[in-house]
Every structure is written in C-alpha cells, then in structure tokens.
Length: 196
Image (cartoon, rainbow, N blue to C red):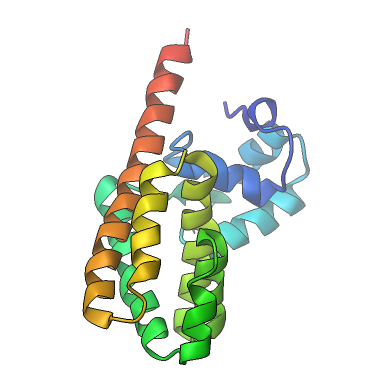
C-alpha cells in the first residue's frame, strides 16, 4: 500500500506523485484508487494529476484505471539531460547578444526557464519546459549543488563560444544526470534500511 500522505505533507497530487516517482519510491502498476486512498483525496484530482504526469512522461495510462510508472533507469536519466543540452544549445545559437548577456547573469532555474521561453519551436519549448520544471528542478531541490554550480558557472562563461559551450554542456549534462542518479540511489538505500 502506498503511504504518500504520511511522507509528503503538502503539494498538489501531481507534485506529490511526481516526487515519489522521481525519488524511485513507487514503480510498476498502480491503480487510481490506490493513489486516491494513499493521498486521502478523491479520484478526480488523482485523475487530473495522472494526466499531467502522463504528459510529462512519468506514467503510462492503462485501460483498467491503472497506470504504469515509467522506468527511469540510469540510461534514461543520462539521455534526458543529453537531449536537454542539445536543444538548449540550439536555442542559445539563436539568441542575440543582449539576450546572451542577460542569460549569463541568471541562476540555474531562471537560466533554463529563459531558454524554454526563448525557444522558437513549440515542440522544443514544450520539451524544454517539461525537462526544466520536472527533472532539473528535482535535481536542484535535492542536491547540495556544489559540483553542479561549478560546472554551471563554466557553462555560463562559455556562452560566447559555441565550440566551448558544447563541451561545457556535455559536462553539465553529465553532472546533472550523475546527481539525479545519486539522489535516487541514496533515497532507495534509505527506503530499504527504513523498512522493518
């Protein structure tokens, strides 16, 4: 039985379920009723949350009012951040000097948000928004950030030179992926030790 309400005291149903999925606390096939019971809410907000989570690629709806949690293995995490880096580089290539200058003064969350806002392609904009608001924010919220901040600082310094930027983005994507993998592994180990 899921026990999401005991662990997560606040947040929308989508935020709570997303957090549990990204931390690796839930997996496999789960019914809408089980989510509703675990959160202590009706099925309507759970259904709405599951629509959002499906849109973000975290679940797959099944015909029996169940969902299958997407398997987020290490390779999937690495691929997500590689895809993010390639798309963000394309957005950066199209920015003018003034936008590049303003980009260099932003923190990580604002940096990524600015890039998806400035994406010309609607598909790229949507994909980058989901990556930022789901995966990057997850890493930033759960990380002490030291290594990521250092690598991100180098990335911002390279904004004017596309060849250096590509190399810095590769290192940054690897750092984000490694940190997300570390967070998930640490949480799974703590869950295992906490179980009676």
